[in-house]
Length: 238
Image (cartoon, rainbow, N blue to C red; front, top):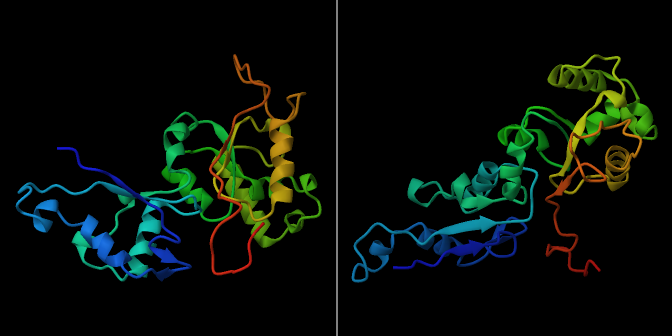
């Protein structure tokens, strides 16, 4: 017997700006209940209606988002708890793609816990846009990252250790193989500039030539949010 699947958006469907929408909790508990318990005359098997939460938001792992849903609805009972497997974030479809770059250097950007996402996806060699501007302060001299502080010193040390590179390295030494936009950046000015530096250089000084590469630039993967979304702010966005 065919069981229909259910795809559920999150903000605006089960809650709005962190506040539960009436009836949503009952619907979630229904989906977490075996069909046999709902209607024993139709089936005695322990069959559940398959469902997933889908969202174009990001910046956190699927498990963290699941915990936030449980917290919002005060779900503590194990049978009804939302699991990480129940959630599809904006970057989740890119998980198979990450496997192709797990040992290659990638540039990542977006607000939120980007490093945890990269690490959970198996990416070992990465540098974020913020880290890039700290390592190469002249790339964005108007940013505070150009000022050497205890924080920027720690960032430099962490990146050099992660990538096993010398502190005397230059941008030419970064063999960046791909760019991943995992969420909307806090500052598009900074991000667009660095992305253009990395993917748009024809002299290959920022990224080395990829073997047998027929593209004009390295690949750019984007899991960005919508520019228009429903929130508590009443005026239209556009």
